Length: 94
Image 1: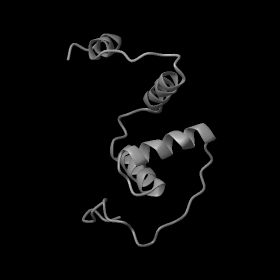
Image 2: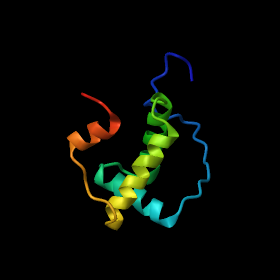
Image 3: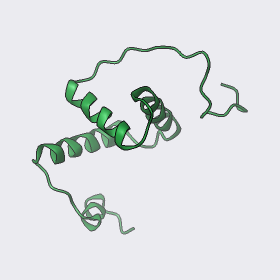
Image 4: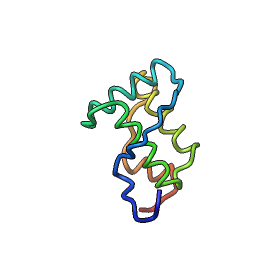
């Protein structure tokens, strides 16, 4: 892509890829794209991939933590925490 191209424009030369996911993770993805108002799973995954490339500051470890927390909430093993608790865990004063 050249510097002048809009990254939100769909490339007419789309390439198909194969991706293996667990059924439960795919169910989470499907629920998420529908809840977020995306038109399709592919549109959502392209958006997520584009966002990950644009914002590489967020590490794989961070994504794993989010996924584990989401799984814990859905399975009932974990409870929601307040904003203050999250800031305390991160050692952030704002």
